[in-house]
Amino acid sequence: MTKGLLLIDDSQDHTGVLTNISDHLRANEHINITTRYINPIAKPYWDDNKDPNVDNVLAAIRTEFLTLSPGLIIVDQYYSDTTSFDGIYLISKLREIPKFKTCPIFLISGKRDKIVRDIFTNGDKTETDKVNELSKIIGYGISRFLDKSFKDEAIEILKHRNLNDIFPAKLREYELQEIKIKKFSPKFSEFSLQQLADHIDSNSSDASSILEEMFELTLAHYAKIDAGL
Image 1 (tube, helix red, strand yellow):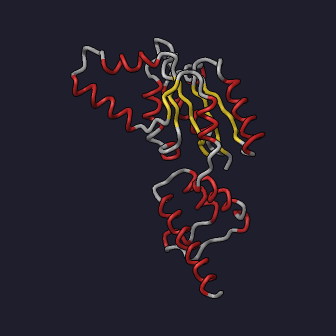
Image 2 (cartoon, one colour):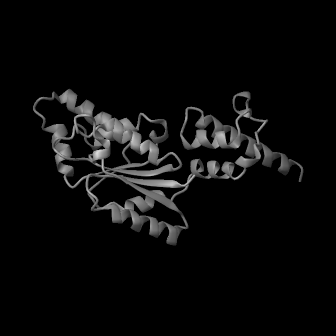
Image 3 (tube, helix red, strand yellow):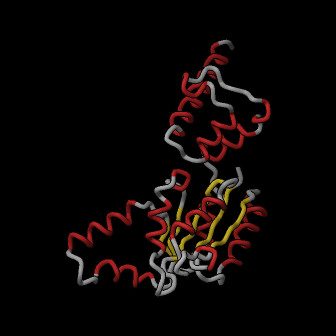
């Protein structure tokens, strides 16, 4: 499954950077990625009161990644003054969706100092509230907290391939043959290769178990070959 790079920003000023990143990865790393852009306060995501609705934005993000693996999502922090959500809140909702639970996410803003002030200088919050809010933000697993310059950091993240990328791609090479791995545990032995790839790509609750069994079978296979030499 092709990696996707998504920018969520109410300005299109940096959409050209997505093309630069894609071109660089293809030319220098032989990696193809698909780029996407969403303006979270655009009219398609308004509710009945003509206000941007975070659920509508999340639905759009799901749609963009139906056939893509989330390689990196870059989220701007601040939108219009009338918007009921910001980038951190949007990230918190993304982390509730299995497919985006562990994918790399950058938070970008031209006002990084304002984010810190919002947390620590809000007079309505107790010190405990401030610490708890900071702890929650850390728990969202934000990979980078950057200004609007993110090209180099994005390339560094996207050029690395891990086993969660490699295994699904290899499984899908055989998906038309309806092959099943009968030596898997009963829970997984009836899954097609496509279903196994889908579980890994979506980071489902079974993904880590599937990867572990694949490792064990692969090692057992090579141990058997080695013993016969």
